[in-house]
Length: 369
Ligand code: AMP
Ligand code: MG
Image (tube, rainbow, N blue to C red; front, side):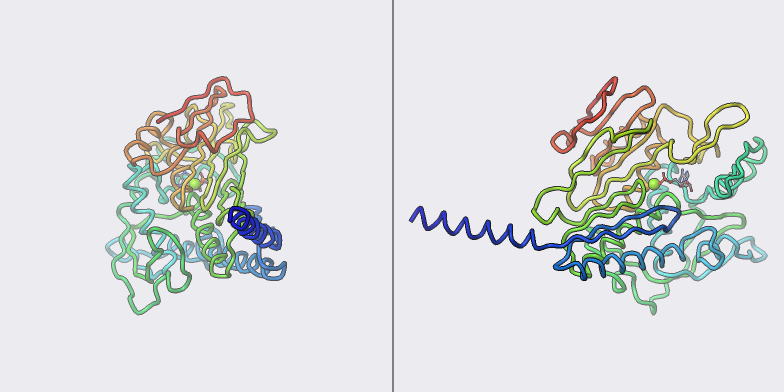
């Protein structure tokens, strides 16, 4: 009897191994959203995995054409260059994707008390971050442009229910369904949007949905600092992904993930050195209209939804260490974080304890429960 049962277990285990070994991995790289992106998908065969990767590439390129601030016929470009009426408001009809991103951004703007603010574009542009023609604007210019940055003034004035909802176009397996329809928005004169802090997270969520739709069970997206994984590796083990060393060199930590995203915002990603010899980074404080200056090198968020992780990595960077930890506690610890400080310190949420391995000699390591 005992032998029979062992044999059954052995056969099940062998089948499982055989199935996992028979999965073929295909990797595809491309550049979109100003980022070198790689998609690795396991499929029944190389052809199906490669086909799934192509679908992801197409979806990301499609989204880039909607959300780009610089492509002249993108929807965001159209919003940013719309002509206001006599009352100082412009009315624009937008696709479900843009409606969803605006709705989600309004939620996150409130949730983070404005740390996340997609209406900072006029300010960010003035500092030269869109063109690379960097400069430190005058205080007057900054205050003048900040007048346009109250994102709560944007409104979704009408939902166009005749258009198909977003989740019927592409199903996503999220706790909150990505449901939205086309809509008409109104925005005050001068307001300009930039979804640079969540666009890649959203694209990652869509990409995972595309992989699922294509029948894939296992895959990894590397969209620059944004990692999103579908399922586990084919053998059932977790994916292991590294957190970048802000000072260069090998990753400082490795984190195990399954069905999750790990998204980093770092001051080292894009910055310029001003005439005053100071470093000005691409992450902005919406209260001051200036690049954030604090004691953080990077903020990594680990959670289920890419759009949430992307918005929060930027927001917690803006908040700084103490407020970031307060925020995490107020949110009921519904995400994990790994923060690297300028004084070679590491701070992370204690629930990562079993999934993180440190690979760097930090001067201090602190865990928060
Ligand atoms: P990330 O790399 O995800 O942290 O996003 C940074 C990008 O988001 C910048 O390059 C800007 O385009 C934009 N951005 C900068 N500061 C903010 C902010 N406080 N809220 C929202 N978007 C921002
Ligand atoms: Mg972000």
